[in-house]
Amino acid sequence: MTELLTPSTGAITAALSGDYTFDTAHSRVGFAARHAMIAKVRGAFTEFDGTLHIDVENPAASKATVTIQAKSIDTRNQMRDDHLKSNDFFDMDNHPEITFVSTAVNQTSGTEFTLTGDLTIKGVTKPVSIPFEYTGSVIDPWGNERAGFEGSVTINRLDWGVNWNTALEAGGVLVSEKVTLEFEIAAIKTKPAAE
Image (cartoon, rainbow, N blue to C red; front, side):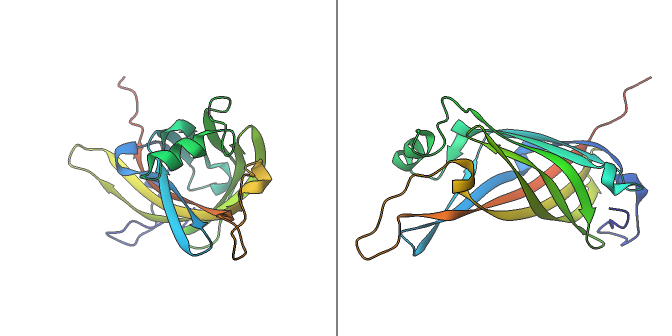
């Protein structure tokens, strides 16, 4: 992240370095999967939090953590949400949290990087690499320093033991094995403690 740019000046800024917390009111953690082989169903988790540590001079020292409350899943259909919460899918009573903890950061261009880490779903932990784009930084009207990031990655849910499916009469299955995870993050920089 040594070349991350400010949207207003296009200049390299070391000021981006620091610790951040997610502004969940202006962030989204979502997903998309194919239904019946033809339609894409989208959903989101409404309860989550996360932290970032950004080191512009040494990008490899940067890190991120995300904790999602699995029961906050929302696909705009209560029957489907209840099914997703059951043991057929996420078994949320026994596995209430989905977590991601980064293990490496690799900058791939001036505003793009890959965040590699451990994703835990339904008690199973697997490594994933998520391409992210830095979308800019700004100081809001209340004096908070904000930074934005967007990323997505497609995973195979079977790798995490989320196996339920049913065959379609014409061929294929009801729910795709591949699921795209989507992250649209607004983060607020932690202010130094008053002396």
